[in-house]
Length: 302
Image (cartoon, rainbow, N blue to C red; front, side, top):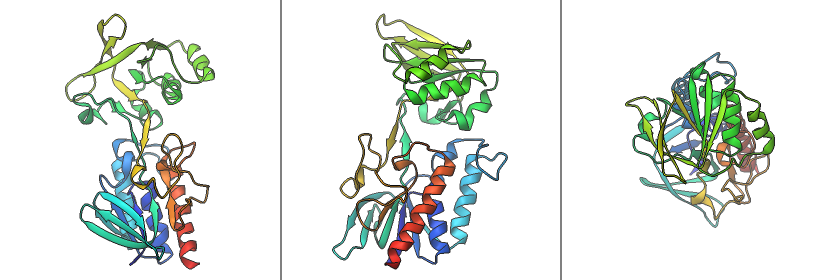
C-alpha cells in the first residue's frame, strides 16, 4: 500500500509529489491527459518566479523531471473511481486497474469551457487562448476578441486593452453580466467595443486564427470579425464530479476546503484549480500542492 496517491499531474499535483517525497513518503501520481496541465497550452509564460520567461511545456517538463528525480512514481491513466475503505485507506480505480493508499490528494484542476466548434482543439495555442495574463503579450499592437460577458471576460478585456490595438467583446446574451465596476472601466477604454446578442458560429483561418464568424441572435445576420487572437472566457469546469460523495462542492462544483486543503473526509485533500479559491495561477496551484502534501504527511503521522 502506498502512502499517498495524487490524482492529477499539473503544477499542484506534481508539487505535492515533490513535497511528499521529500518527507520520505511513497507517492504515485495519476494523470489522464498531459503532465503539466493547462500551462502546457501557453507558449510563453512570464509570471513564474525564477523564470524571466519559459514555455509552458518546458516548465511542465522541468516539474515532472523534478518529481521523478525525487522518486515519485507516475502513471498515465484515467481515474474512474475513488472509495474509502472501512480501515480508512483509499482504493483508486483506473482504466488500467486499482491502487491503494493511506491518503489521497485531489489535484484534478478545472477545464476551460470551450465553444465546441469545428477545428477549435487544433487552434488552441495557435490563436485561441484562455489566459490574457499568460498570452496577452503575444498580441501587442494586434486586434483581439474576447468571447464571454462575465467577470472573467471583462477582466481579460481590461488587461488586453493595454496591449492590443483593439479588443472586441462578443457576448451571446443581450447584456454583459460582469460587475458594473468592471463595465465602467471598459467604458473608459477607447480601443474596446462590445457586441452583445451575438453567437460565435465558427473560426476563420487555416492553422491559425484570422477571425470569428458571428451571428446576430435577433436578425440572424452573419458577419465576420477579423482578429489575430481569440480569448475564450465562457467559464470553467472543475473536475470533481467523480469524487462528489467524498467532498463538499460549492454551487459551481469546486471542492470546499480550508487553507489547509483538508476535505470533510479524513485522509482526503484537495489542491489547485479544483479547489474553491479566488486566484487560479501556477504559483497558487503549486502553493496548494505543498500545503496539501504537508497536511497529508501530518495526517499519516497521527
